[in-house]
Image 1 (cartoon, rainbow, N blue to C red):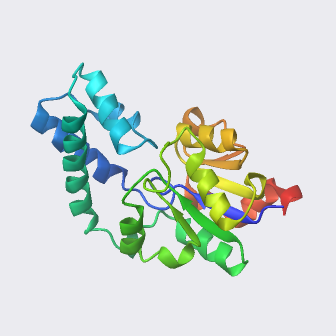
Image 2 (cartoon, rainbow, N blue to C red):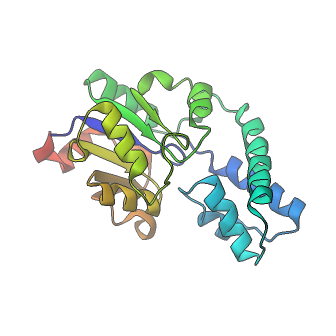
Length: 219
């Protein structure tokens, strides 16, 4: 039986993707590195340190670990400053409604995000009260596609993986859910999240009614 829901943050609850893109673009421009939207897509769902290494690899750049960490921190500072512009209006259409329905029906709800800034984003959205558990980039060492963040969230909710549905918009996130033994709902195009158990183009379509209908034998 499904008793818990675990949500990724970026691209599922809200879309901070543009803010991330602008921060990586500024850092790359400052460093004289190539960075565009196509390369940015490769960063979807992975940690900050993994992201900067993808950019460096693309630019055939090698730096010592201390410098890499310094640059990753610089990018994060640019991004965090931009979060102050976020408000309750920045929920993706359908996300707030789904969270409200889950709360009303008594399901356990967790966040399972690679972002270390997830608590700040939830605070800006005034969304903290929707979540029983917040798993973020500080919660586990291995980021997606390792299932650790989802396993952490399930453990904190005191639920086995097969009692939970994960909502993800990244290929690596769906990979992580499958590896961990979770049911999965993909948000986004077929080529990115088509390997999820159930897929919707947008969160607006991912109503609790639709999810329950598809997983009818689990409710």
